[in-house]
Image (cartoon, rainbow, N blue to C red; front, side):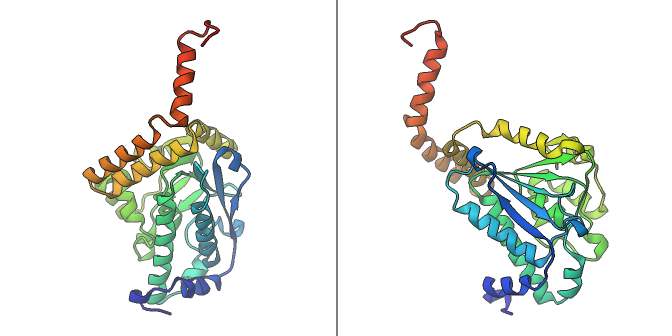
Length: 281
């Protein structure tokens, strides 16, 4: 395979495809609402992610990059689990440092693409969400925790550190002190522990976790997709660029919405609401 200076993602994809097991699929059932769902499905291994699934995850996100009306994407697992981390058989079979570097580069690029989508991302964590599974969640804007979740960064126990950028993203999400504590202790958090540590934003009952998560998302889908995507782009810019550049970008996007069709429609509705009994309004 290529050296780090000459990363060839086609070569890496061919390599990862060798490691079969499970599937990751993109559901378009809620596309009419602006919502996509990415399902992790590897039931025999609590949705541990294989090489093939890494390729499929990237393919799903590449599709979403082309979806111009998208508002949100939900990542969740089938069978009552989100993702228990990397497939151990895959980990044992890909033991060289070069192979590890290429796999890490693939997943970091894939998850960065997820984070940079112009739509907000939500991860529903259920059951054992450990190691690489926990890393994936850190690239999402929101995390909803099922009350049966067991969440933790257990990489240290395996004699490694985070493979896919999870330490960096965890620091950005909850701050350096809390992040370092979770990484050093390999602590397994309950749903309440996830909330207390700033990892999770909401808790749902396990028996109807997906339904309750969809209800939570629904509230955040109310605006037109152009508005949702603009807000997400501004927030992304604010976290990755300078203050001055972010303010200028926000100002530019605002000026595009002012006086536009959505703005005029909203103003018209507000005028009607001022005096709903006036038939001329």
